[in-house]
Length: 448
Ligand code: GDP
Ligand code: MG
Image 1 (tube, rainbow, N blue to C red):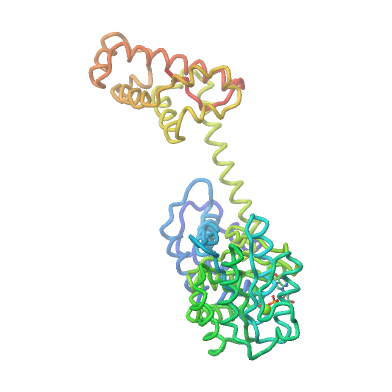
Image 2: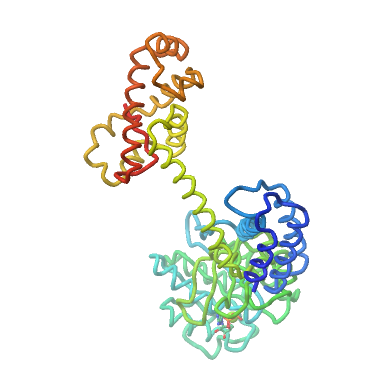
């Protein structure tokens, strides 16, 4: 697997502090192979690895990750970005029914999806209607009715109630779609899902029909359904449908199979359209919103590697925290510089009040928390910055004349400087206690 191959690559690179071009090439080579194994289209692989290489060479090596791990992290981020980052929701019409049209090759899973989408929308409180605009294939309308029954969602068909005429190949799918939407409007269905015909291969008549349906019903969403098993053909098919009907989102079907999901990357990469849903079986509930992060690790088959990377980063954080705790354990070592660093960290964390409110064991301090003034952090910073390095490191030498000078330099009053000195001493004590295991480390006592 890619995990094994990358782990082997990591071994050779371990201990190196810098990304050389050769390191990057070695790792990128493995990633290229993994993408091809996952059936990502060749031109997409080429473009993708070039982008990764560029990012990797420009990346700063941090202490938590070795160079190869860093590249994998870059790859993962890049994959997620192309796959859409976050899931996009269905756009709803401002008034009248929202129309969702399905397009794709025959067998892609459109009719099955109509039922799943309908069921899902219903569970969210909508009133969906399925519309049978596939009049091409024998039994297509009947199939949609079976699907609708199973999902508990009504179906609009050419001649409702008379199944024998449903499969009339001379019927007009554009008219059916138009009538279906009109019916939805009249009967207050709020979402219309229009099922359409597909061919085994892309053909112009089919595309023209899909375009006509689109123009007739002006859908909020045109979802392109594609079989995840389609492999290298994904690019060509997606491009044809993108040009033909200019779809707004992608649904990846048959993800329950053993396809590694390369089609997802190919389609997202060449069309720039978001993948919105994943279809994961024949049942009406085998359906979920698309998760770029899961797909990224599926494509690269590197769940293990990502876990390792996460652990490495966590360990590094822990080592830093321990260094700090050690420092607090020794009262002499805790200086105004440490105090300043802590202040800045607190500021980074956002609202002090919110932060303190979330911490367990702080209930007894509610009054002090309410009284906390965040702007005081800025004044404290100004005072500390007016101290000399020697004074910051050895606060004991801060006698009256030094305090007066600092007050003048920072625009504070002497009594404010005195107050800060007191708080600093308290912080020292608190840090010492916390370092002995009596509380949460990393919290200064610098609250007025
Ligand atoms: P359409 O021609 O695009 O309407 O495709 P269908 O909805 O008729 O599906 C074609 C076949 O694929 C049917 O046998 C479905 O049961 C099956 N199918 C559809 N979606 C999935 C899926 O997500 N997983 C699996 N395993 N089968 C699916
Ligand atoms: Mg169908």
